[in-house]
Length: 326
Image 1 (tube, rainbow, N blue to C red):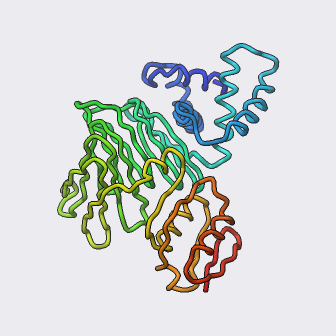
Image 2 (image 1 turned 90 degrees about the vertical axis):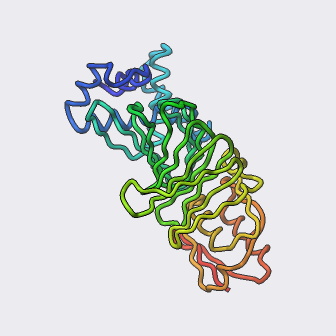
Image 3 (image 1 turned 135 degrees about the horizontal axis):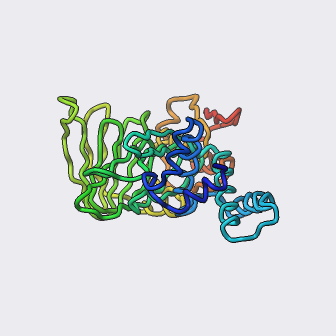
């Protein structure tokens, strides 16, 4: 089966178990199964459109379209468009994939590199926005009593309501249980905190207690509130979602008020794919209020921080790192 036919089969939106031809193709070799997962996962990205700009997508589309050897029917042109975005997404580092075809269910895995954002639609219609070094694992089709996904990083979810099949976001050993709602999760493995932020609906934040594998401390999160679990102390904190929360997910604008420089440095590192190194501990505790956009130029942004600082500091760039010192 060539790539064009495989892409066409995937765009038909049939379940894997309903296509003997696809199953036979996948079972022929490990490379075939990896190719299927690669295209299937990127098809999910196309459902809401990824964050690549239109000009880049059109350039890729035109390049692939020229390779369709003069054919102009709509099916082939659609395949050319999908192939263009697949090529662009892979080259940008968007995708990691693997497959488990036990019970004929494929497992999709999306990885969004630092400095990038994307959005996908899950098999149940749930919409997810992902950004900055985030990994999401989900099945080709949800089966059983629960709709389980795994998240490392940060994502905003608009969950399709299904009271008989709760939606569960697994974040390491912890989890967030949902019926149908809009909420965000920030759960990077190397962070000291796990945060759940509820916009509307109802979620339950289950924190592993360590007694047994299925022992949890459960907390209900109120709308327009966030719940933060401190992994170091084991304490849980509740706060009101700040103004500008939606701007980050909808427009890529992050608002902050009285935030420490070292905390901002983590966010900056993920958004702009840089590493910030402080040459003096005092600099980490400096406080800033303002906004930053994913579209900002990092050089201009550093000048803004420098001018906004009560005390002067110097910085320089070297091989993807920003060194800051007094």
